[in-house]
Amino acid sequence: HPPIVPLQAYLDLYRHAQIDPPKRGSWCSDGADEAHAIAGSRFKGSKFTDAQVLEIRRAFYALCTHIDHQIRVLIGTLREEGILDDTIICFSSDHGDMIGTHNMWAKRMLYQSSVNVPMILVGRRGDPRVPEGSVDDRIVGWQDIMPTLLDLCGIPIPPSVEGISMVGTRKRDWLYCEVGEDDHASRAITNGTHKLIYYPVGNRSQLFDIRNDPDECNNLAADGKRAGTLKELQSILISQLYGGDEKWVKDGALVGRPHKPFIPGGNRTLSAQRGDHWPPPPVTNIPQIEWNPEKTAGPRE
Image (tube, rainbow, N blue to C red; front, side):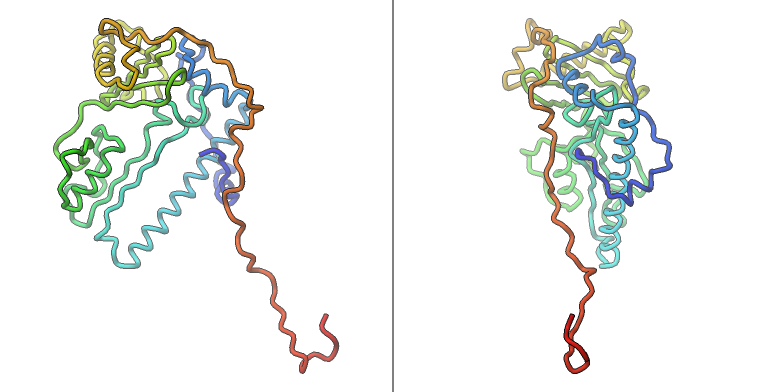
C-alpha cells in the first residue's frame, strides 16, 4: 500500500532479481477505452519513468515477503503454544494494487490486480471440509468470511446473513462488485469465467475472459462471438443497481451518463503524501557506565 516503503533488508532480497514489467492490455494502447475513472488512475503514475516503475514493483514484492515472514512468526507461535491444531486461520486482504498494470495505479479499480485478493483458509486438524493443499475455484467475496468461520466453528449462520460459507455445498453463480460514485463510479459482474466492467460516464463496457486471459489484456465487448455473454452479464448488472445507479438504465438497457474528460485537480500533487506513522524504536545500544567512587582514582568524566 502506498507509501511503498519496505525495510531495506527485504528490499535487498530483490536487489538482483529481474522484475517483471507491468502488463499492458491491447485495449489501453490507443486510449479508445479511456473512461473517466481509467484516466484518473493513469494520471497518478504519469510522472514515473519505466525504471521507477520497476523499482516500485520491486518494493511491492519486498513488502509481500515481509508480510509472509510475519505470518510465519504468528503460525510458529501458535504451534509452539500447542494450539495450532485447534486454530482456524483465514488470510485475506482488503484490496490489491495496480502497480502499473494497464498504466494504472493504487486501488479502487475493478481489474484483477486490484480486486483478486488472497483467500487462504486453514481449518482445524482433521476437518474434512478444508483438505490440506486443496484449491477451490468457487466465486467468493468478503461477505463470505463470517459465515465460513461460523460454519467451521459449528455455530449456526443467522438467516439474515447474505454471505455463503466457503466450505458448504452451496455456491454462487456470480458476484457483483462496485467502487466509487459520480464521475469515478465503476461496477462489475463476474461469473468466474468472464468479467464485465462498466463505467457509467461515457456508457463504456469491458468484457474479459478471465479464465484464459487473467491479465485482462483483451477487451471482448465488441466481439460478436461474445455478444451473448456480454448481454447476460449486463442483465445481471442491471438487476443489482441501487441507490441512484438505476438512472443509468433506460428501457432495460444501460445508457450511463454523457462522456466527460478527466481534468486533474489542482492539489499540487500533495494528496498522496503521508506522515510518519511509526514511532521510533527504543534506544538500546547506548553503553551504560557505572561510576563507583571507591574504584575510580580521578574525578568522573
